[in-house]
Length: 386
Image (cartoon, rainbow, N blue to C red; front, side):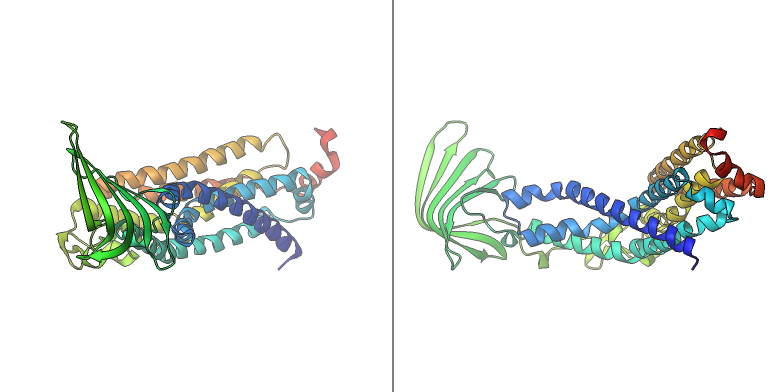
């Protein structure tokens, strides 16, 4: 590999790693807000919290990586133009395609990595995320009742535990039950224990009081008990059916499943026409999205390397390239929504990346390669020559 290619490739790779790392951290912080309530109020373990937030990151990465690559190419090549590095290379006889080679190599590698993400990694991680989220939502025993705090088990139950012993015994229990629309129920107990009652996670309370208040009359009744159990969750998920979402299905299923197939092996309902269209859209979206890496790279290279190397003739092309990239990204999202209603719109998923790539190639091939005098003119004239 030529020294120039290695130098440009190193500049691009370092900038891409730094920029992508900052973007991933920002996306992780934004995404983690979804699970803060379960982490803070329901005692979700830190390991489970981190796993939930990390499992979705490759999906975001497959969308934002082409944008990051485009921004990195614009930044690195524009900086080298301002530093006259590319002017010197062009004066030495290096063609614009040779200057584009490192960026295109990186774009092809990221395109292949994007297909790995969309066709294999993202569906697997999405499946693991949905399965874990399903278990957390339906198995309250996976969520520890936090000592000294009010835990919102669901929209009708609030549990307070004063302390928890080493053997799992709960002390100082208060449970507020809003399941009955006509009653306010508050249960207090000295001791309790997490048990399983009829396949449901429950709290068995000992030596307590059940207080019921009628919301209409205000009448309060008390019931003293030696032991009482209250269910905190649904039945075990082993007896429940989780229907896989389209984002976690394999590419073959997305292309082959029809309205004659069941939505799940043990579930009698079949796919509707709308669900089949959504799956076809998802399949083509996975094929079209990685192409944006090469397409956006060509647009950025065409904006910076076509025409003469001067400050006056480049800004307009940079603005056009940025607008083209934004429109291509928006067109892919819009085409996906249209394809859910009619599969005739599926080809529009490829219009954005292919059109952006055509714009970049047209820029790079439209202007003739400068001759020897034109190559040397910018470096001889310098800023004073303009």
